[in-house]
Image (cartoon, rainbow, N blue to C red; front, side):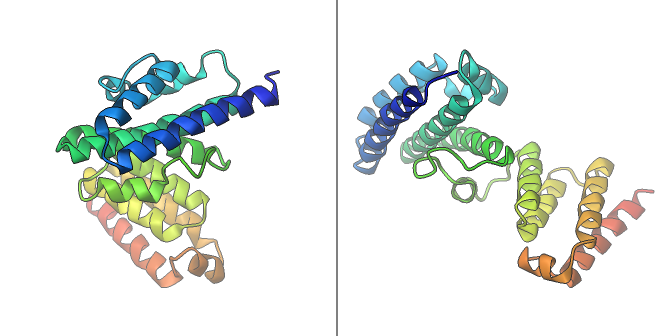
Length: 224
């Protein structure tokens, strides 16, 4: 079993790198920041800042998982998400919106994956939050699977209003998709059995839930 002191030493080392990178970005020393990020990404993923966004999400996870236990892989994911956030900020400042968006979407997927495991995000003080990344990605729509993951996570965490928002954003990406409409119906049917108090606490009072259910039902019936 991997020793706890090794994990702590690993975390200390990479947190120091993240602090340095964030400081360089804040002072707009973008060249210095990119150099640090390039070294860090090559150490973790064996690719640099010029090609990290070309890696599929699954490939990033596979590279991070080589030879390490899950607890350290989670820490690595948080570090890479933090680097991708900063790399996106640099790209945005350099008027490269497509690159910044790719970085933030990949960072969002990594953080979503960590949160969907039902555990606190490692290095939470350095890793970007889901809300922060979603805000940076506005006003452009997200990939459909990203909305699906957001819907699932928000429902799991009892943020039913946010889950509903993700559902309708998902439906907007693929209008009149039977499978997605059925997904929406299943979502509302799961919530219907909850108490009024639980729904209100989740930001989706029963009257609003019923309105949403009627809209999804009407859309589905038009396709029958």
